Length: 126
Length: 126
DNA sequence: TCCATAATTCGAGTATTATCGAACTATGGA
DNA sequence: TCCATAGTTCGATAATACTCGAATTATGGA
Image (tube, rainbow over the protein chains, first blue to last red):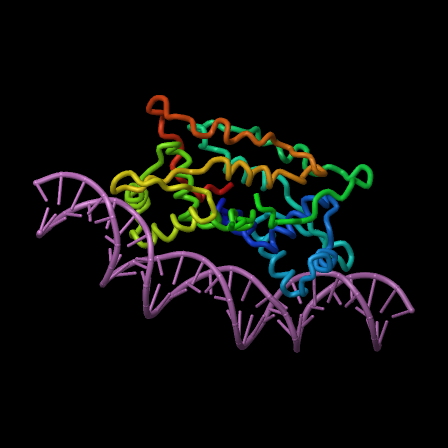
């Protein structure tokens, strides 16, 4: 039944490449992106890409669906939602600081072209 | 100058033990806890504890201050705040879903005894 | 049927992390 | 001064994780 722990989710995102993949998928929204599109965009060898996609899938952060020869991966927003809820929990003596609502607005269908926002910098100096 | 990346923060929390330490400190609030209190609570050998505390410190998630013989570690809330802002960013075509306000309520001085809320389960099945 | 493409799996090599006993460095009290 | 305590650092070992070429498994089009 594979219960996933918070630290497993964090560890999955705690890798430059996987975080970049995840963020691409979050931006891509519901339709997602197929593997080689991601691979081309991040310049990853297929085997390496597959390894990371499998990791993200295993912990449930992304889901893949096959469409003919392609596999489209998309972020599973509620999982991130729960993770954020977990992180914000207990910081105020057990009361949640932030409403956990990421999933309600997440799939956000790309209405227009939408200026392609910030690049996938996972290196932002924060 | 050491710029810390989001994936480094996530990786730091992506370890069962470090996440448990961090959550203890988040709950402990501003005064923090000294090393051996944490070590006793999590049954960690001193060397192992030091290793993880150093890791969390290096990425800025916690800060230590020496008080006589003791070193009190405390969570640095704004860093988590920024991390959460980063995670919630871009999920709605560049607009932030959640207000990044964790730090405003974070240090939350333990008013009364406060029922000691949930244990440090980082294994919550999410 | 045959070939090209999409993607995964295998396997081997490399690199990074984690663990923890033992030695070491303060600091404070007797 | 001497000892106990709080913590860190060192160093060696063990365990995981990452990378990626090559082989493998679909799938669809010619």
